[in-house]
Length: 262
Image (cartoon, rainbow, N blue to C red; front, top):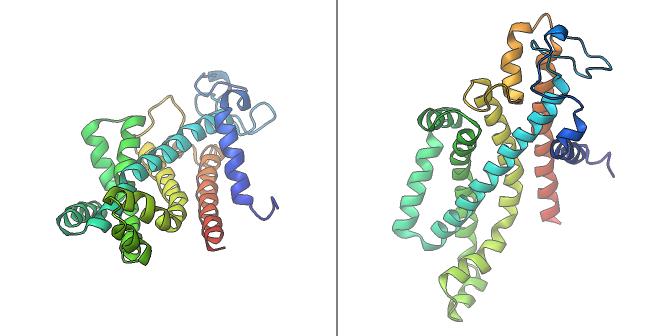
C-alpha cells in the first residue's frame, strides 16, 4: 500500500520531520563553524556544510518547517477568504458577483510572482510579509473554482426545494450548496499548496521572504550559486526537496480526485 502512494508517504515523513525538527536535526541550523566550511557529505554532516560551516541537513529540516508552514498556512487563509466569496458571488449574482469577479480577474491578470514581489515591496520583507503576499495571490483561483461550482448547483432541485421551504440565503449557501461543490475545491487545495511552496522559495531566493540566518530552501539555493562547482551538493539538496514536495502534492491532488470520484 505504501509503495502505491510514495508521494503521500513522502509528505507525511516531511511533515513529521518538520514538526520534530529539533529532534531530527542534531545540530543547530544557524550556528557557524568556520573551521568546517563547505564540507562534503559525511557521517558527521549527512548533506555537507555551507560556506559558514552550518549543517545543510539541519537547515533543510528547519527550512521544511518554514516552507510547509507558509505553504499550508497561506493556502488555508486563501481558502477562508476565497471559498465564501466564490460561493456567495455565484449564488447572489448581479452587482455583488460583478464586483467580486472583476477584482479576481484583475489579480489573475498579474503574474503571481510579480504581484507577490509588489506586495512584499509595499509591506516589507520577512516571513509574515511573504505569507500575506502568497495568500493574496492564491485566493483568486479558489474564488473562481467555488463560483463555477455554485453556478452549476444553484439551479438544482434541492436548492429550489430549500428556497420553497423558506430557508435563509446563508443556510442555502453554506449548508446546502457549498457541501456539493467541495470536490473541485479539495482537488485544488494540494495544487494551491504546491504553488505556495514554489512562490515562497522564489521570494526567499530573491531575498524578499525568509531572511538570513533563518533557513529556507529558496534562500539556500540563492546562497549556493557562488559554490556551484566547488560544492554542488549545497544547492542540489534543497532543489531536489522542492521538486519532490511539488510532485508529491500533485500526486496527493490526484489521489483526492480519484477518491471523490468513487
